[in-house]
Image 1 (cartoon, helix red, strand yellow):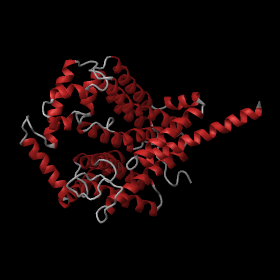
Image 2 (cartoon, rainbow, N blue to C red; image 1 turned 90 degrees about the horizontal axis):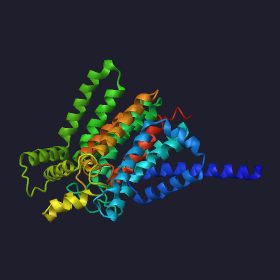
Image 3 (tube, helix red, strand yellow; image 1 turned 120 degrees about the vertical axis):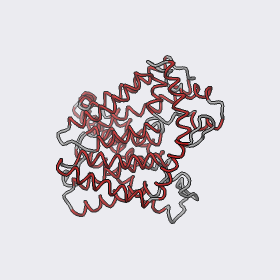
Image 4 (cartoon, rainbow, N blue to C red; image 1 turned 180 degrees about the horizontal axis):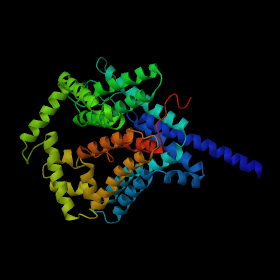
Length: 411
């Protein structure tokens, strides 16, 4: 019996290690490999199930308010299938997309030591460096394995994923690198992290056309500044931030042209046949608000947005832009799960801030994450779109698992 028990414990330990390496694979593959992300998630789930010790895992989940909020949001979405106006296929697609919310409690229950958190964050950083290297190499070389092969800055500038998804992740990475530089006690590491942060920021402001990412970068860096700097340094730091922001804006023709275009799209908006980025969003949001008014409390059910707006959009071109999602996660939850779903999503955002306040050594990247997710979800569906959910969900699980470790703290 002792031999069997020993072998069982050994097997469970190996499965636990496998699951943890699966988490590292998720974080490494966020911005450049859907296949590796799916393989890693399969390894993570299989290892988590086979490693057992569920009472301990549940106790780890209970430590973070983020786990309850993520599970609650998914349950509301799943229950909405009972009254959904969508067909079975669309309901299943919706539930499958949001089922990744369950990765959050799994990751929290797996990554419970400083050493594994350190490995996970290094895996995330390594994946972002791969993407960053391709973003700059793409200036001089055509690489057949990238999305930008034989394209230019006038089109989709995401080398592996859509440009909005890439720049949103890169905005978080820029803040992450600054945080690592601030925490590191070794000069060499500080220089490395500052250099990576600078390259990440410039890839957004000078190599990309994604306004969402450009705004996310500024808001993320400002948030990091406000929650990290001692009070006596707030005003000088704000002055430095404004100066850097002006320099980036004045030196980036891409940033200037995109915001000038946004201004023109707003001032020249016509409700019908406006296919501009801003104009199309205004039409989608207007229709979404009308659908919310029809069923404000519980919504029309999971996956119902597309069939409902297909009836509203007579224009086929407009439908190709806005029938998949309204480019606003709050409105999407409002249409499909009503006020209940919107409140559950807001509770998820609030739970991240609660977790931040509960941490003895408050990790400033939690409020940075909240502002990036909230901002992205005002102009896109950050938890539905696969390329964005690949970032937002596993990174939230890792943030909720505990503080970021530096090279010195794990030595």
